[in-house]
Length: 105
Length: 199
Length: 123
Image (tube, rainbow over all chains, first blue to last red; front, side, top):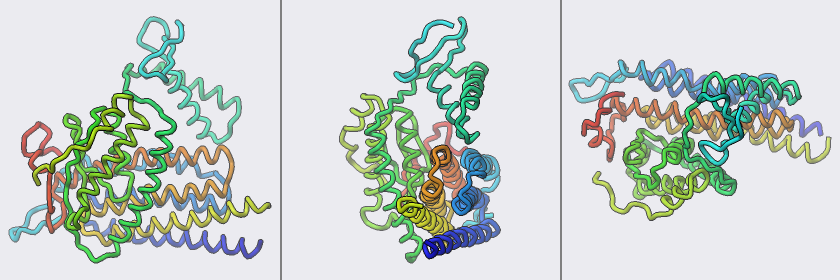
């Protein structure tokens, strides 16, 4: 009973650490870009990571207090990247260098 | 309030309110009530009554046009679609993981997949199902020709493009068997279009 | 606590761990792939499979009727809304020419866009 409990505790901690590492790596991708559309994709994945993190917390504490937050994120998490893809990326066309390579801002 | 009548689809039992265009779509009211109860988190009679009240007010305030979108719910087909989606998600996820850690870079391709079913609902549901599977990315949809344009990551590998097309057609048939009308199912049972479009 | 509940707890925890692993793998893929369209392939992993595994794990550990209903609703809406975003991003990326530096091996869409059907050119 107690060993099983300890194993579960360790696995939940490992899951949380994985999510945190994933979030940190994602921040690097948001920072580095290179284009606005990359950041839009990252925004979607961020919403998914937040939902997963809240899920780990809910599984650890066995409470459903934050479920409405997850529901609203699943509802509306896509609006930000839709806005970026629809309106900002239009002005974000990559400039073609003289050498033929593309330069994504 | 006049009698109960059927509108839009076989599931849509509606009330016509007064003589205007305002109708109460009962399945819609039920669905909104379920969401209301789940949002509050406790199934009680007060929540149920409040949910029905809010849903009825919403349906009266924002009337929807009476359109038959051709939705038929087939439980067996939905089960098969769900099972196939799960299987496809796991196998494609393993494939994408292999591509992540393999030596890139890849030659990508954009492939046109002409679908056999012309119904809007099946077209949309197929696109949603395909893009929910890891490794499926829908770039463009042509409603006029019911064509789906797919981004294939590792197109240099032989058989990869053809495999992606076959997966989309399989998904289309399963979606038609889960949500389509009898006409759609007959359309989806036809053989796949032969002949490669010119590259 | 009986054996069944303990087994459900353990299974839920394992599923949670697997789901979080999918999230991590997807993000690593987003770092490794070279262009937007490839990255959106990797981004689908945490959004659908990772989410599904995590939420099924949470449901196995909570085992309460309303909570499981809410979790099912979360999965449903996530599966319904995430293709909208990923399709718009992919469409926008294709139309602004961000298809990778190595080019496309085969492109069925390009000749259709230059037909001038009224929608070509608008991202």
